[in-house]
Length: 75
Image 1: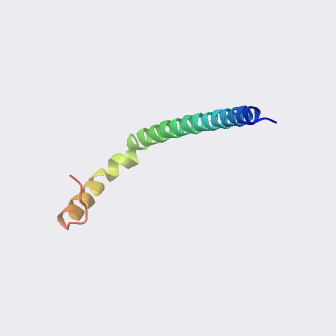
Image 2: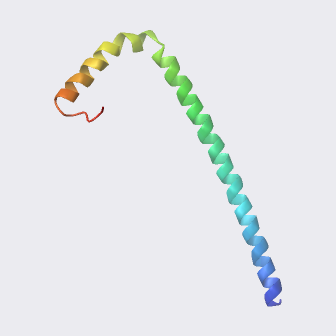
């Protein structure tokens, strides 16, 4: 096998691996998008629930206490 043939074979192999990597990256990207959508839907469902609305004052009170105590560095 000549050096040119070997280089061509390596180039084809690199192209194949690159394409395989790209397909896997696209699959994972699509799965991440699906999971983010599911998370958003679940969050919206929960935040519209009675439980979320009933416990909101408790969450706010806890947040205020933590902020006053310097435990929460939020805005």
